[in-house]
Length: 392
Image (cartoon, rainbow, N blue to C red; front, top):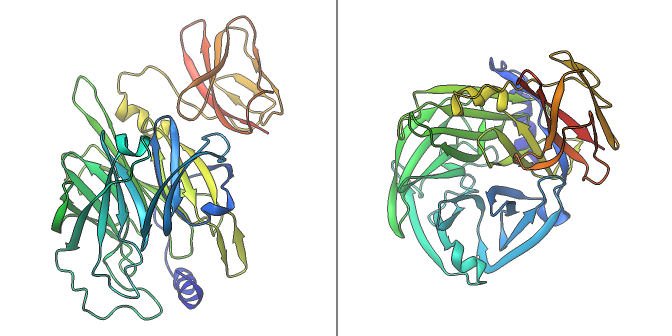
């Protein structure tokens, strides 16, 4: 969305009533390297976040969850028209080359399947899943200037033996979930649900957590509004591909206009990362960034209904459950003021334990990278509370 189209959409947005939704802020983890200015995909694999640009030769960047810096690269001599999403299952990656489908309706929509085992050996052998949409006419007139199509797409997840695609509908501000098989071949993607997200969907991830009551799934969509305000849309408690039912929760991110979120990933279904593209339009300048979003408060009751933990967020230099954590943010030492503290633990956004103390009410964060962490505090009565802390 560029130039004239951007201006028109911002004007339209001025007359759009805001959705009734919760608001929450995504924390900035760090800026991405200049080569990732067009980040459009994000996935968590092998204890790392992986992203890439949406066009040109495929290079996957492993980025640090606590800084956004690139730690490793894996490349394939394969080029894409507009690769907007990556999905995965136990054995394969699925690269969605189905974006930029508005000014000229594409007749080459495809998903490329790549074996994870092959990629780790430096081998890039792609299988092709070619497709069209039910009701799609690539010979129809494309949009001129302002996009109007309902068949643009930037979001995909793997579910069972299917791939689910979520369209970016420029006029209706809704999304339709289309399904197609994961095996190589040529198919017509079939619609399964229409969801009124009130925005442009740009990324998706799916979490499945086993429990005695069965598998609990959370589908998280990300995107932005007509005036480039980001959001996350959660769907959970659904059955199979019936996404129209279950619980729907829209979260409006407090991050500033121009935070053009493009991708979302998670390791546990409660702690999420997002990336946003570099944005340079209408006098607004935003770098490409890695963001983190803690949705424990929204989802722990669903994903882990037997949990006795409470997850409260402490304000800066404020108190939670009578506990004062200071200074927050900190440059090094972090102190907890409460007489009956049994244990304090510091974990990263994946839940990995970094520091702990049972004999002191302080932790030294001096050797850790700048970023956002979770402090877990266990009292002698056995109660656990948690709060975010920020390391400068």
